[in-house]
Image (cartoon, rainbow, N blue to C red; front, top):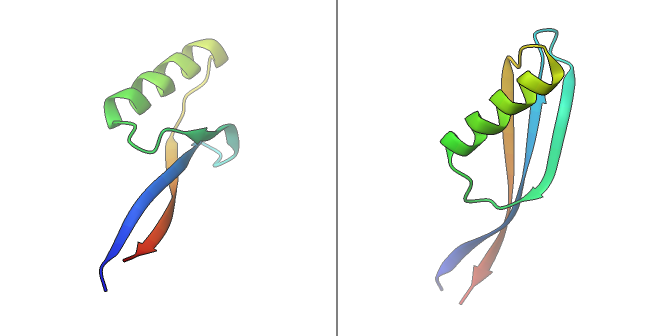
Length: 66
């Protein structure tokens, strides 16, 4: 039996220096690249006017058996 993983979606959480969540993005494409995450962070920092110190990403995956 082979098991395959299929990524369904991802969530990004941006946190400030106090470790408070400042922005959460849900149901984004799970194959987002780090350069795209960096661009989002920089854009959000410019709009908000404060520094993002931590970004976490959670990917939801479905395991399929064949």
